[in-house]
Length: 111
Image (cartoon, rainbow, N blue to C red; front, side, top):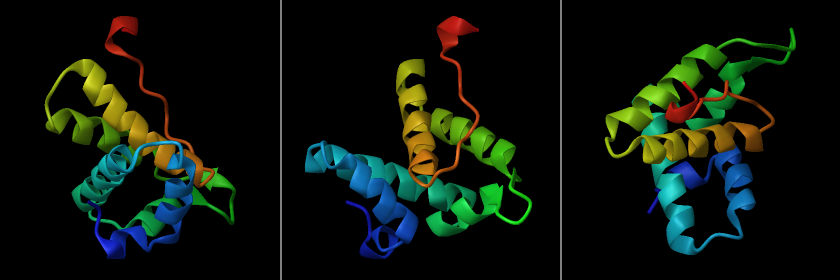
């Protein structure tokens, strides 16, 4: 179960609002994954959203960093390529819920 402090972040509340169609257990699993990812990159969720896109210049700044970090983080947990892709897609969905995009990851069968 994600910590109350983590769930209190505005970007997490925005993302959690997109998960209302999921069972509570699956919702918590996704939020736990995001909390672990935030710890992995040593940033809180709101900082990640602020860092990835420069509002003043209207350009992405750290998209490559977060795209790579999502892929490495998902792979560090092991499991099948499909499961790793699912994990990185959960992280991508968090950014999308805040109007930001990570670069797409291709499934292994497309490489």
